[in-house]
Length: 82
Image 1 (cartoon, rainbow, N blue to C red):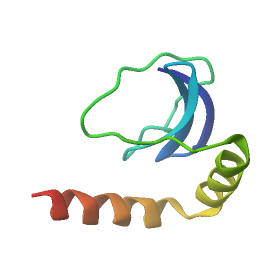
Image 2: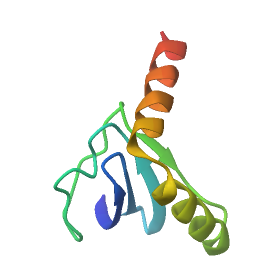
Image 3: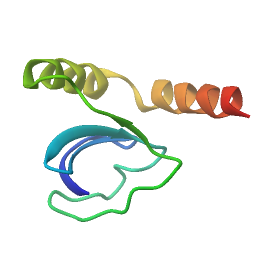
């Protein structure tokens, strides 16, 4: 996976298997750089938008959220998966 854009400390837009995806994981965007490679991990949540318009909407929405909200959502998801 190659980082295309850092949305915030917990979310990035990346290219994976020739598609742009949104990757969410605690701290994934911290000190991340455009064009950096990263390995896919089980702890990552990967969202594949159906089309470019939906990618732009999702990207803008995630970028506008405070990092604390994404941390909270990630924690809730992790607890629910247990």
